[in-house]
Amino acid sequence: MLELIDVHAGYGDTEILHGVSLEVRAGTLVALVGGNAAGKSTLAGSVAGTVPVRGGRVLFEGRDLASLRAHERARAGIVLVPEGRKLFPQLSVEETLLTSSSFAPARTHRKQNIERMYALFPRLVERRKQLAATMSGGEQQMLAIARGLMSEPRLLILDEPSLGLAPMMVEQIFVAAQALQAQGLTILLIEQHLNEALKRCDFAYVVENGCVVLSGSGSELLADARLREAYLGKSGRVAA
Image (cartoon, rainbow, N blue to C red; front, top):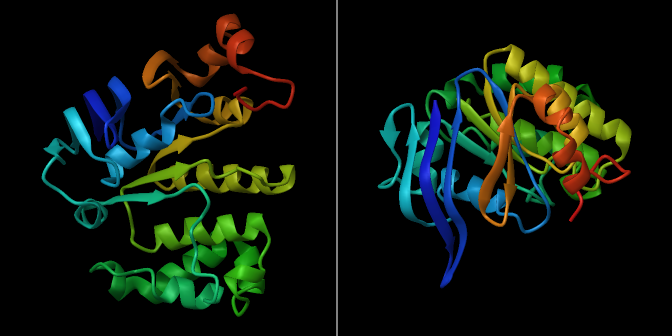
């Protein structure tokens, strides 16, 4: 479904990705892990269209995305749930969801999709009239994911969804991601909780200094002594 071939990308005069190649097959949950400033979010942006690609190719369902802007990629089925959530603080849960399905045919399914979001995240039902600014970090993350899903994506990119969340909320976010995959959604998960990500993914890539340095199934990487020694701290998060 998604293929990056020798991708170089960055900001201004600074190149951050140095020839990254990877593949995300349809219906899979693929994890991207690595330390801080490894290039993970830059890679997400290069797929979503928020970071310029200087070289190489980004293919989605066989189509080269080079000519497509971010909103055109979203219309094509790629949705990025960014790090930090970036919600409108003065909108309620319900208002956020109602204003999120901007593409046809998602607009025609708005009511059904809101019910799907409430089924996926029951806590949002309880908070449906509450302003985003007054919600906990975990509740905001649920809302950010639900907002992205309202556009009916075929590829969902989750950038650090567990960042700053309590363990119970982290578990709920991962359970939701697995439920979405079980429904047929393809997911690229960018994550700091290495143990949790590798236990739940089909395949994973480890990024260091803008390059892919390791790849394999989640179980293979969990058993890799090099990975554990180099990246895994006592918290289960990837060390900086």
